[in-house]
Length: 411
Length: 81
Image (cartoon, rainbow over all chains, first blue to last red; front, side, top):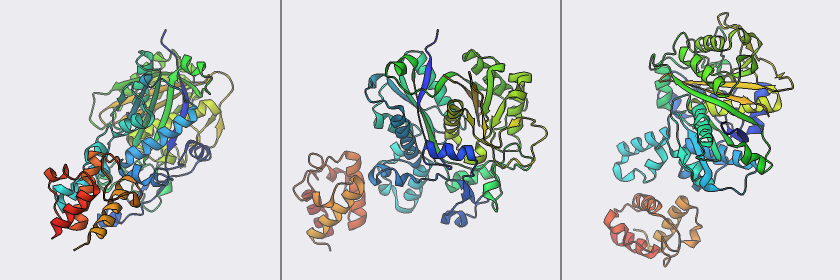
Protein backbone atom coordinates (compact mmCIF):
# COMPACT_ATOMS: atom_id res chain seq x y z
CA UNK A 1 0.00 0.00 0.00
CA UNK A 2 1.52 3.29 -1.12
CA UNK A 3 2.00 6.03 1.44
CA UNK A 4 -0.87 8.49 1.45
CA UNK A 5 0.12 12.06 0.66
CA UNK A 6 -1.80 15.13 1.78
CA UNK A 7 -1.71 18.83 0.99
CA UNK A 8 -1.15 21.07 4.00
CA UNK A 9 0.08 24.41 2.66
CA UNK A 10 -0.88 26.65 -0.27
CA UNK A 11 0.77 29.71 -1.80
CA UNK A 12 0.33 31.79 -4.94
CA UNK A 13 1.10 35.05 -6.65
CA UNK A 14 -1.05 35.51 -9.73
CA UNK A 15 -2.76 37.97 -12.10
CA UNK A 16 -5.91 37.75 -9.94
CA UNK A 17 -4.30 38.10 -6.52
CA UNK A 18 -0.93 38.28 -4.83
CA UNK A 19 -1.74 35.61 -2.26
CA UNK A 20 -4.04 32.61 -1.97
CA UNK A 21 -6.93 34.26 -0.07
CA UNK A 22 -7.13 37.13 -2.58
CA UNK A 23 -6.78 34.85 -5.59
CA UNK A 24 -9.44 32.47 -4.33
CA UNK A 25 -11.93 35.21 -3.49
CA UNK A 26 -11.53 36.56 -7.02
CA UNK A 27 -11.61 33.12 -8.63
CA UNK A 28 -15.00 32.40 -7.06
CA UNK A 29 -16.34 35.78 -8.15
CA UNK A 30 -14.84 35.76 -11.64
CA UNK A 31 -12.44 38.54 -12.60
CA UNK A 32 -10.06 39.05 -15.47
CA UNK A 33 -6.35 39.53 -14.79
CA UNK A 34 -5.64 40.68 -18.35
CA UNK A 35 -4.60 44.27 -19.03
CA UNK A 36 -2.82 46.33 -21.65
CA UNK A 37 0.92 46.13 -20.93
CA UNK A 38 2.23 49.48 -19.71
CA UNK A 39 5.77 49.21 -21.03
CA UNK A 40 7.65 51.15 -23.69
CA UNK A 41 8.74 47.97 -25.43
CA UNK A 42 5.21 47.20 -26.62
CA UNK A 43 5.32 50.18 -29.00
CA UNK A 44 9.08 50.02 -29.54
CA UNK A 45 8.84 46.58 -31.17
CA UNK A 46 5.34 47.08 -32.57
CA UNK A 47 4.25 43.82 -30.94
CA UNK A 48 1.16 42.25 -32.50
CA UNK A 49 -0.16 41.51 -28.99
CA UNK A 50 -0.21 44.40 -26.53
CA UNK A 51 -1.75 42.85 -23.42
CA UNK A 52 -1.12 40.12 -20.87
CA UNK A 53 -2.13 38.99 -17.40
CA UNK A 54 0.54 40.36 -15.08
CA UNK A 55 0.76 39.68 -11.35
CA UNK A 56 -1.35 42.02 -9.22
CA UNK A 57 1.38 42.41 -6.61
CA UNK A 58 4.83 43.20 -8.03
CA UNK A 59 7.57 41.07 -6.46
CA UNK A 60 9.33 44.29 -5.41
CA UNK A 61 6.50 44.94 -2.94
CA UNK A 62 7.13 41.60 -1.21
CA UNK A 63 10.86 40.93 -1.43
CA UNK A 64 13.67 43.19 -0.26
CA UNK A 65 15.61 45.05 -2.93
CA UNK A 66 18.73 42.98 -2.31
CA UNK A 67 16.83 39.67 -2.44
CA UNK A 68 15.15 40.64 -5.68
CA UNK A 69 18.42 41.73 -7.30
CA UNK A 70 19.82 38.22 -7.12
CA UNK A 71 16.76 36.48 -8.53
CA UNK A 72 15.21 36.33 -11.97
CA UNK A 73 11.52 37.37 -11.82
CA UNK A 74 10.50 33.70 -12.19
CA UNK A 75 12.49 32.83 -9.08
CA UNK A 76 11.07 35.85 -7.23
CA UNK A 77 7.55 34.55 -7.87
CA UNK A 78 8.57 31.03 -6.77
CA UNK A 79 10.03 32.24 -3.49
CA UNK A 80 6.98 34.42 -2.74
CA UNK A 81 4.54 31.55 -3.33
CA UNK A 82 6.67 28.95 -1.49
CA UNK A 83 7.03 31.20 1.57
CA UNK A 84 3.26 31.61 1.71
CA UNK A 85 2.71 27.83 1.42
CA UNK A 86 5.32 27.23 4.13
CA UNK A 87 3.69 29.73 6.53
CA UNK A 88 0.26 28.33 5.67
CA UNK A 89 1.35 24.78 6.54
CA UNK A 90 2.27 25.77 10.09
CA UNK A 91 5.44 23.67 9.83
CA UNK A 92 8.22 24.68 12.20
CA UNK A 93 10.20 21.70 13.45
CA UNK A 94 11.18 19.59 10.47
CA UNK A 95 13.90 17.12 9.47
CA UNK A 96 15.43 19.15 6.66
CA UNK A 97 17.16 16.07 5.24
CA UNK A 98 13.68 14.62 4.56
CA UNK A 99 12.33 17.82 2.95
CA UNK A 100 12.54 18.10 -0.87
CA UNK A 101 11.58 20.63 -3.53
CA UNK A 102 9.92 19.95 -6.90
CA UNK A 103 9.49 23.38 -8.45
CA UNK A 104 8.88 23.68 -12.15
CA UNK A 105 9.18 26.30 -14.81
CA UNK A 106 8.35 26.21 -18.50
CA UNK A 107 10.91 28.69 -19.76
CA UNK A 108 13.18 29.69 -16.88
CA UNK A 109 15.10 32.94 -16.53
CA UNK A 110 14.28 34.47 -19.87
CA UNK A 111 14.45 38.08 -18.61
CA UNK A 112 17.92 37.49 -17.17
CA UNK A 113 19.15 35.68 -20.28
CA UNK A 114 18.00 38.36 -22.69
CA UNK A 115 19.03 41.28 -20.48
CA UNK A 116 22.52 39.79 -20.29
CA UNK A 117 22.61 39.38 -24.08
CA UNK A 118 21.57 43.02 -24.49
CA UNK A 119 24.30 44.04 -22.04
CA UNK A 120 26.92 41.97 -23.84
CA UNK A 121 26.06 43.52 -27.19
CA UNK A 122 25.85 47.09 -25.91
CA UNK A 123 28.65 47.17 -23.32
CA UNK A 124 30.82 44.10 -23.83
CA UNK A 125 31.52 40.96 -21.79
CA UNK A 126 32.90 42.79 -18.74
CA UNK A 127 29.45 44.20 -17.94
CA UNK A 128 27.70 40.82 -17.95
CA UNK A 129 26.98 40.38 -14.26
CA UNK A 130 28.47 37.42 -12.38
CA UNK A 131 25.03 36.38 -11.07
CA UNK A 132 23.77 35.88 -14.65
CA UNK A 133 24.14 32.08 -14.78
CA UNK A 134 22.46 31.23 -11.44
CA UNK A 135 19.68 33.66 -12.33
CA UNK A 136 18.92 32.32 -15.81
CA UNK A 137 19.16 28.58 -15.10
CA UNK A 138 15.78 26.84 -15.19
CA UNK A 139 16.48 25.17 -11.84
CA UNK A 140 16.82 28.65 -10.33
CA UNK A 141 13.33 28.65 -8.75
CA UNK A 142 13.77 25.16 -7.23
CA UNK A 143 17.25 26.01 -5.99
CA UNK A 144 16.15 29.29 -4.45
CA UNK A 145 13.20 27.66 -2.67
CA UNK A 146 15.49 24.90 -1.37
CA UNK A 147 17.96 27.49 -0.11
CA UNK A 148 15.25 29.69 1.40
CA UNK A 149 13.50 26.90 3.32
CA UNK A 150 16.44 24.58 3.97
CA UNK A 151 15.11 21.67 1.91
CA UNK A 152 17.96 19.21 1.55
CA UNK A 153 16.36 16.02 0.17
CA UNK A 154 16.92 17.19 -3.42
CA UNK A 155 15.64 20.16 -5.42
CA UNK A 156 14.03 19.07 -8.68
CA UNK A 157 12.87 21.00 -11.73
CA UNK A 158 10.44 19.22 -14.03
CA UNK A 159 10.37 21.02 -17.38
CA UNK A 160 7.54 20.05 -19.72
CA UNK A 161 6.34 23.40 -21.08
CA UNK A 162 2.79 24.14 -19.90
CA UNK A 163 2.51 20.78 -18.11
CA UNK A 164 5.49 21.57 -15.86
CA UNK A 165 3.58 22.77 -12.79
CA UNK A 166 1.39 19.67 -12.72
CA UNK A 167 4.39 17.44 -13.33
CA UNK A 168 5.99 18.96 -10.22
CA UNK A 169 3.17 17.47 -8.14
CA UNK A 170 3.68 14.15 -9.89
CA UNK A 171 7.33 14.25 -8.94
CA UNK A 172 6.59 15.33 -5.38
CA UNK A 173 4.14 12.48 -4.90
CA UNK A 174 6.71 9.98 -6.20
CA UNK A 175 9.37 11.34 -3.84
CA UNK A 176 7.16 10.75 -0.81
CA UNK A 177 5.76 7.40 -1.95
CA UNK A 178 9.23 6.06 -2.68
CA UNK A 179 10.37 7.09 0.78
CA UNK A 180 12.95 9.61 -0.43
CA UNK A 181 11.24 12.48 1.39
CA UNK A 182 8.45 13.11 3.91
CA UNK A 183 7.66 16.69 2.91
CA UNK A 184 7.94 18.32 -0.54
CA UNK A 185 7.43 21.92 -1.61
CA UNK A 186 5.88 21.54 -5.06
CA UNK A 187 5.06 24.32 -7.47
CA UNK A 188 5.64 26.15 -10.70
CA UNK A 189 6.79 29.64 -11.60
CA UNK A 190 6.88 31.65 -14.80
CA UNK A 191 7.84 35.19 -15.75
CA UNK A 192 7.93 35.37 -19.53
CA UNK A 193 5.96 38.54 -20.28
CA UNK A 194 8.90 39.86 -22.25
CA UNK A 195 8.80 41.10 -25.86
CA UNK A 196 10.67 38.08 -27.26
CA UNK A 197 8.38 35.31 -25.94
CA UNK A 198 5.35 37.43 -26.82
CA UNK A 199 6.67 37.81 -30.37
CA UNK A 200 7.44 34.09 -30.56
CA UNK A 201 4.06 32.90 -29.25
CA UNK A 202 2.32 35.44 -31.49
CA UNK A 203 4.34 34.22 -34.44
CA UNK A 204 2.97 30.71 -33.98
CA UNK A 205 -0.56 32.19 -33.82
CA UNK A 206 -1.06 30.95 -30.25
CA UNK A 207 -2.02 34.28 -28.65
CA UNK A 208 -5.34 36.09 -28.65
CA UNK A 209 -5.21 39.32 -30.69
CA UNK A 210 -8.09 40.97 -28.85
CA UNK A 211 -5.89 44.01 -28.16
CA UNK A 212 -8.82 46.38 -27.80
CA UNK A 213 -10.57 44.23 -25.20
CA UNK A 214 -8.01 42.33 -23.07
CA UNK A 215 -10.45 41.41 -20.29
CA UNK A 216 -12.56 39.37 -22.71
CA UNK A 217 -9.66 37.82 -24.61
CA UNK A 218 -9.25 34.61 -22.62
CA UNK A 219 -12.47 32.75 -23.37
CA UNK A 220 -12.09 28.96 -23.18
CA UNK A 221 -14.88 26.97 -24.87
CA UNK A 222 -16.41 30.11 -26.39
CA UNK A 223 -16.95 30.12 -30.15
CA UNK A 224 -15.12 33.47 -30.27
CA UNK A 225 -11.88 32.16 -28.69
CA UNK A 226 -8.82 33.16 -30.69
CA UNK A 227 -5.83 32.18 -28.59
CA UNK A 228 -4.43 32.26 -25.09
CA UNK A 229 -3.42 35.24 -22.96
CA UNK A 230 0.10 35.26 -21.53
CA UNK A 231 0.11 35.16 -17.74
CA UNK A 232 2.81 35.11 -15.08
CA UNK A 233 3.22 34.19 -11.43
CA UNK A 234 3.64 31.10 -9.30
CA UNK A 235 1.72 28.52 -7.32
CA UNK A 236 3.07 26.41 -4.48
CA UNK A 237 1.69 23.40 -2.62
CA UNK A 238 3.29 21.87 0.43
CA UNK A 239 2.62 18.15 0.39
CA UNK A 240 3.55 15.66 3.08
CA UNK A 241 3.17 12.04 4.04
CA UNK A 242 -0.18 11.64 5.79
CA UNK A 243 1.40 10.17 8.93
CA UNK A 244 3.76 13.14 9.09
CA UNK A 245 0.85 15.60 8.86
CA UNK A 246 -1.28 13.71 11.37
CA UNK A 247 1.57 13.47 13.87
CA UNK A 248 1.84 17.24 14.02
CA UNK A 249 -1.89 17.88 13.96
CA UNK A 250 -1.74 19.77 10.67
CA UNK A 251 -4.70 21.28 8.91
CA UNK A 252 -5.20 19.00 5.87
CA UNK A 253 -6.72 20.51 2.72
CA UNK A 254 -7.06 17.23 0.86
CA UNK A 255 -5.26 14.18 -0.40
CA UNK A 256 -3.04 14.19 -3.47
CA UNK A 257 -4.48 10.81 -4.36
CA UNK A 258 -2.84 10.16 -7.72
CA UNK A 259 -0.93 11.65 -10.62
CA UNK A 260 0.19 10.67 -14.08
CA UNK A 261 2.35 11.86 -16.93
CA UNK A 262 2.16 10.67 -20.53
CA UNK A 263 3.53 11.81 -23.89
CA UNK A 264 1.60 12.05 -27.17
CA UNK A 265 4.51 11.20 -29.49
CA UNK A 266 2.31 12.78 -32.15
CA UNK A 267 3.50 16.34 -32.97
CA UNK A 268 5.83 18.82 -31.33
CA UNK A 269 3.10 21.42 -30.73
CA UNK A 270 -0.27 20.22 -32.05
CA UNK A 271 -2.38 18.19 -29.64
CA UNK A 272 -3.35 14.73 -30.76
CA UNK A 273 -6.80 15.45 -32.28
CA UNK A 274 -8.21 12.29 -30.73
CA UNK A 275 -6.81 13.32 -27.35
CA UNK A 276 -5.20 9.89 -27.01
CA UNK A 277 -2.24 10.94 -24.86
CA UNK A 278 -4.49 13.02 -22.62
CA UNK A 279 -6.95 10.13 -22.33
CA UNK A 280 -4.18 7.80 -21.25
CA UNK A 281 -3.04 10.37 -18.71
CA UNK A 282 -6.55 10.73 -17.27
CA UNK A 283 -7.04 6.98 -17.01
CA UNK A 284 -3.60 6.45 -15.51
CA UNK A 285 -4.15 9.17 -12.90
CA UNK A 286 -7.51 7.70 -11.86
CA UNK A 287 -5.95 4.23 -11.70
CA UNK A 288 -3.09 5.61 -9.61
CA UNK A 289 -5.61 7.18 -7.22
CA UNK A 290 -7.76 4.02 -7.16
CA UNK A 291 -10.85 5.99 -8.21
CA UNK A 292 -13.51 5.35 -10.84
CA UNK A 293 -14.83 7.85 -13.41
CA UNK A 294 -18.10 7.92 -11.42
CA UNK A 295 -16.19 9.30 -8.39
CA UNK A 296 -15.19 12.49 -10.21
CA UNK A 297 -17.29 15.60 -9.61
CA UNK A 298 -15.05 18.48 -10.68
CA UNK A 299 -12.35 19.12 -13.26
CA UNK A 300 -10.06 22.11 -13.49
CA UNK A 301 -9.40 21.93 -17.22
CA UNK A 302 -6.26 22.96 -19.08
CA UNK A 303 -8.51 24.94 -21.49
CA UNK A 304 -6.18 27.65 -22.75
CA UNK A 305 -8.72 29.32 -25.07
CA UNK A 306 -7.00 28.35 -28.32
CA UNK A 307 -9.19 27.30 -31.24
CA UNK A 308 -7.34 23.96 -31.61
CA UNK A 309 -6.57 23.06 -28.00
CA UNK A 310 -9.85 23.09 -26.09
CA UNK A 311 -11.64 20.42 -28.07
CA UNK A 312 -9.13 17.54 -27.85
CA UNK A 313 -9.21 17.94 -24.06
CA UNK A 314 -12.99 17.56 -24.16
CA UNK A 315 -12.62 14.45 -26.33
CA UNK A 316 -10.13 13.02 -23.83
CA UNK A 317 -12.41 13.79 -20.86
CA UNK A 318 -15.36 12.20 -22.60
CA UNK A 319 -13.35 9.11 -23.50
CA UNK A 320 -11.84 8.71 -20.05
CA UNK A 321 -14.97 9.50 -18.02
CA UNK A 322 -17.57 8.05 -20.39
CA UNK A 323 -21.20 9.04 -19.88
CA UNK A 324 -20.33 10.29 -16.37
CA UNK A 325 -18.88 13.39 -18.07
CA UNK A 326 -22.41 14.86 -17.99
CA UNK A 327 -22.25 14.87 -14.17
CA UNK A 328 -18.90 16.62 -13.95
CA UNK A 329 -18.62 20.40 -13.46
CA UNK A 330 -15.67 21.91 -15.32
CA UNK A 331 -13.86 25.14 -14.49
CA UNK A 332 -11.53 26.83 -16.97
CA UNK A 333 -9.69 29.26 -14.73
CA UNK A 334 -7.31 30.47 -17.43
CA UNK A 335 -10.29 32.61 -18.46
CA UNK A 336 -9.40 34.66 -15.36
CA UNK A 337 -5.66 34.20 -14.85
CA UNK A 338 -4.47 33.92 -18.42
CA UNK A 339 -2.02 31.14 -19.17
CA UNK A 340 0.82 31.00 -16.64
CA UNK A 341 2.69 28.43 -18.80
CA UNK A 342 4.94 26.40 -16.47
CA UNK A 343 3.18 27.85 -13.42
CA UNK A 344 -0.35 27.20 -14.66
CA UNK A 345 -0.58 23.63 -13.38
CA UNK A 346 0.55 24.68 -9.92
CA UNK A 347 -1.90 27.59 -9.68
CA UNK A 348 -4.72 25.41 -10.98
CA UNK A 349 -3.76 22.69 -8.48
CA UNK A 350 -4.13 25.27 -5.69
CA UNK A 351 -7.62 26.08 -6.99
CA UNK A 352 -8.54 22.40 -7.34
CA UNK A 353 -7.46 21.71 -3.76
CA UNK A 354 -9.46 24.70 -2.53
CA UNK A 355 -12.51 23.62 -4.54
CA UNK A 356 -12.45 20.26 -2.76
CA UNK A 357 -11.70 21.83 0.64
CA UNK A 358 -14.21 24.70 0.45
CA UNK A 359 -16.68 22.77 -1.74
CA UNK A 360 -16.95 25.74 -4.06
CA UNK A 361 -15.83 25.82 -7.67
CA UNK A 362 -14.04 28.71 -9.38
CA UNK A 363 -15.85 30.24 -12.31
CA UNK A 364 -15.17 30.42 -16.02
CA UNK A 365 -15.60 33.93 -17.38
CA UNK A 366 -16.23 35.14 -20.91
CA UNK A 367 -18.31 32.15 -21.94
CA UNK A 368 -20.94 33.89 -24.05
CA UNK A 369 -21.63 31.33 -26.76
CA UNK A 370 -20.41 27.86 -25.88
CA UNK A 371 -18.77 25.91 -28.68
CA UNK A 372 -21.42 23.31 -29.65
CA UNK A 373 -18.65 20.77 -30.24
CA UNK A 374 -17.69 21.00 -26.55
CA UNK A 375 -20.89 20.22 -24.63
CA UNK A 376 -19.33 20.25 -21.15
CA UNK A 377 -21.06 21.48 -17.99
CA UNK A 378 -19.02 24.67 -17.50
CA UNK A 379 -19.08 26.49 -14.16
CA UNK A 380 -19.86 30.10 -15.02
CA UNK A 381 -21.25 31.33 -11.71
CA UNK A 382 -20.17 30.31 -8.23
CA UNK A 383 -21.40 26.81 -7.59
CA UNK A 384 -21.02 24.51 -4.61
CA UNK A 385 -19.97 20.89 -4.46
CA UNK A 386 -22.03 18.43 -2.40
CA UNK A 387 -21.16 17.04 1.03
CA UNK A 388 -19.47 13.64 1.23
CA UNK A 389 -16.42 12.24 -0.53
CA UNK A 390 -15.21 14.43 -3.36
CA UNK A 391 -12.69 13.72 -6.10
CA UNK A 392 -11.44 16.36 -8.54
CA UNK A 393 -9.00 16.35 -11.43
CA UNK A 394 -6.69 18.98 -12.84
CA UNK A 395 -5.21 18.61 -16.34
CA UNK A 396 -2.20 20.25 -17.92
CA UNK A 397 -0.77 19.78 -21.40
CA UNK A 398 2.41 21.19 -22.88
CA UNK A 399 4.20 21.71 -26.18
CA UNK A 400 6.18 18.58 -26.80
CA UNK A 401 3.10 16.42 -26.31
CA UNK A 402 3.30 16.38 -22.52
CA UNK A 403 0.16 15.44 -20.58
CA UNK A 404 -0.05 15.59 -16.80
CA UNK A 405 -3.03 14.98 -14.51
CA UNK A 406 -3.50 15.12 -10.75
CA UNK A 407 -6.30 13.67 -8.65
CA UNK A 408 -7.31 15.46 -5.44
CA UNK A 409 -9.59 13.79 -2.91
CA UNK A 410 -11.38 15.34 0.06
CA UNK A 411 -10.38 14.14 3.53
CA UNK B 1 39.22 63.06 -10.63
CA UNK B 2 37.44 61.98 -7.49
CA UNK B 3 38.97 62.44 -4.06
CA UNK B 4 39.41 59.40 -1.80
CA UNK B 5 36.38 60.56 0.21
CA UNK B 6 34.29 60.70 -2.95
CA UNK B 7 35.53 57.27 -4.04
CA UNK B 8 34.69 55.83 -0.61
CA UNK B 9 31.20 57.35 -0.72
CA UNK B 10 30.65 56.03 -4.25
CA UNK B 11 31.89 52.58 -3.29
CA UNK B 12 29.65 52.55 -0.22
CA UNK B 13 26.70 53.31 -2.48
CA UNK B 14 27.59 50.39 -4.78
CA UNK B 15 28.03 48.03 -1.81
CA UNK B 16 24.69 49.15 -0.39
CA UNK B 17 22.98 48.58 -3.74
CA UNK B 18 24.42 45.07 -4.03
CA UNK B 19 24.19 43.84 -0.43
CA UNK B 20 21.86 46.15 1.47
CA UNK B 21 24.64 47.02 3.96
CA UNK B 22 24.34 50.54 5.39
CA UNK B 23 26.68 52.88 3.50
CA UNK B 24 28.22 54.11 6.77
CA UNK B 25 29.36 50.56 7.58
CA UNK B 26 31.62 50.63 4.52
CA UNK B 27 34.80 52.07 6.09
CA UNK B 28 38.40 52.15 4.88
CA UNK B 29 39.72 49.46 7.24
CA UNK B 30 36.85 46.98 6.73
CA UNK B 31 37.60 43.65 5.06
CA UNK B 32 35.17 42.80 2.26
CA UNK B 33 34.99 39.14 3.24
CA UNK B 34 35.62 39.08 7.01
CA UNK B 35 33.82 42.27 8.07
CA UNK B 36 31.24 42.89 5.35
CA UNK B 37 30.53 39.21 4.52
CA UNK B 38 30.69 39.85 0.78
CA UNK B 39 31.03 36.67 -1.31
CA UNK B 40 33.08 36.38 -4.50
CA UNK B 41 30.09 36.84 -6.82
CA UNK B 42 28.99 40.01 -5.05
CA UNK B 43 32.59 41.22 -5.07
CA UNK B 44 32.78 40.83 -8.85
CA UNK B 45 29.49 42.69 -9.23
CA UNK B 46 30.84 45.50 -7.04
CA UNK B 47 34.06 45.60 -9.08
CA UNK B 48 32.21 45.82 -12.40
CA UNK B 49 29.92 48.54 -11.07
CA UNK B 50 32.91 50.43 -9.66
CA UNK B 51 34.66 50.26 -13.04
CA UNK B 52 31.61 51.83 -14.66
CA UNK B 53 31.13 54.46 -11.99
CA UNK B 54 34.75 55.61 -11.77
CA UNK B 55 35.80 54.99 -15.37
CA UNK B 56 38.66 52.69 -14.45
CA UNK B 57 39.66 49.13 -15.24
CA UNK B 58 40.23 46.72 -12.36
CA UNK B 59 41.93 43.62 -13.79
CA UNK B 60 40.61 40.25 -12.55
CA UNK B 61 44.05 39.35 -11.14
CA UNK B 62 43.99 42.57 -9.09
CA UNK B 63 40.64 41.80 -7.43
CA UNK B 64 42.14 39.25 -5.01
CA UNK B 65 44.47 41.96 -3.70
CA UNK B 66 41.55 44.23 -2.77
CA UNK B 67 41.09 42.82 0.72
CA UNK B 68 39.82 45.96 2.43
CA UNK B 69 37.66 48.85 1.34
CA UNK B 70 40.78 51.00 1.64
CA UNK B 71 42.63 48.74 -0.84
CA UNK B 72 39.84 49.31 -3.35
CA UNK B 73 39.69 53.06 -2.78
CA UNK B 74 43.47 53.37 -3.21
CA UNK B 75 43.49 51.22 -6.33
CA UNK B 76 40.69 53.22 -7.95
CA UNK B 77 42.38 56.48 -6.98
CA UNK B 78 45.68 55.32 -8.50
CA UNK B 79 44.00 54.03 -11.65
CA UNK B 80 42.29 57.39 -12.19
CA UNK B 81 45.61 59.30 -11.91
